[in-house]
Amino acid sequence: MIHYSISENENLWKFARRRKRAEGFIQQSKITVMQTLLILFFAILSEVIGTVALKLSNGFTKPMPSVVVVIGYSASFYLLSLALKVMPIGVAYAIWSGVGLILTVIAGMILWRETLDWARVIGIILILVGIVFINVISKSPAH
Picture 1: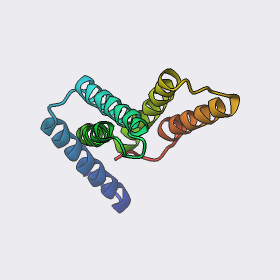
Picture 2: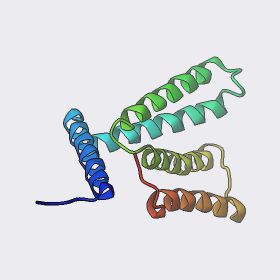
Picture 3: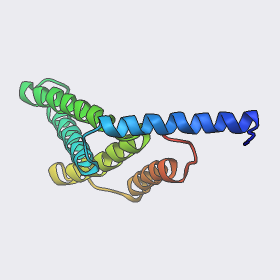
């Protein structure tokens, strides 16, 4: 006969519940990892397009770029919500914001000839390092 203490038994039940939820989630989700990353990529691209259009809208005074802003951000949040069905929110948002930041900086450099001085470069690097630090090194569990 096997005897478990109350705390061991509670841990076994917690493990069993987590495993059952994970198995059910995997069965419900027909989206592969590659499809999820592709959806997230298009969410990022839509967000960058929306941000570029925001600059072009001149404070929403130009109708066409203003419409692109609404469509771009709407598509971005919708696609991000699809990715969040499969990915942990911290990881998805870290990728979304980090890659979006880099692409937006590149767009600013190409379209408006914005320059990067050392302060901006260091600031961007610190943001990216912070995102990686929180999502890779942190021991907080993802849900």
